[in-house]
Amino acid sequence: MAKIMPLADAVAAFVQDGDSIAMEGFTHLIPHAAGHEIIRQRRTDLTLIRMTPDLIYDQLIGAGAAKKLVFSWGGNPGVGSLHRFRDAVEKGWPRPLELEERAHADMANSYAAGASGLPFAVLRAYAGTDIPARNPNIRSVVCPFTGETLAASRALRPDVAVIHAQKADRKGNVLLWGILGVQKEAVLAAKRAIVTVEEVVDDLGVDPAHNAVILPAWVIGAVACVPRGATPSYAHGYYARDNAFYKAWDAIARDRETFAAWVRRHILDTADFDGFLASLREPAHVAA
View (spheres, rainbow, N blue to C red):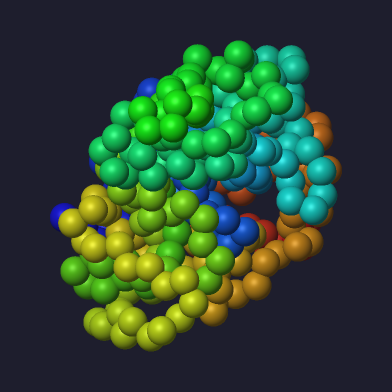
């Protein structure tokens, strides 16, 4: 059953060194505040799972928190490469990064399999690719009805799922809407779940918003109220995407020393996400 608590307490209670962690959100509602708190608490040896790793995973990888990445695409959306990701893969800095690549459809189906308590997902995919030959978690099965060979992919069952949403009520039920990815499936597949939200309210209201999803309190471990907790991504109905930050990140992440100084000043030397947001308003901040 969900408990409403500060984000620092939630990460301390639910995220341990060596965990597999899925931090999902598609285009918006990306849980940056939670990712920063994981860096701030210096968690390490993590297996990061995400369909589309972008800036927050670049930061986690560059901070040395990750030993492995399970993903289907990685990049700085609309800008280019993730330079800390590339440095870890190509040169082992700050530590080598093991990769497990899957297709988008595979990731979505494998989360759904994990959420359903199934050992693997079945899908038509990978024809003409060499990904199954390079990933032991992708095999094949023969359909008992048609005789056709289908891809079988091991279910994704992270130790921890972390997402951001718009609202939670005081019992810990969560409401999110807008462009959604696999947040619901990731939470249901995980052993433990943390949700950061824009606000905690008495009544969710449940207006007929497009794609609205309610996650009941009993599938969530902790809810933390962190306004603007998806920044620099956006939260539908609350604030816009900070496109300038995404562009500025390319220069910050290209150089190891510049990146390390940025993490130290804006994450490690701040007490929480409010402190991070305040640090971005400093005149000298290169991404302001």
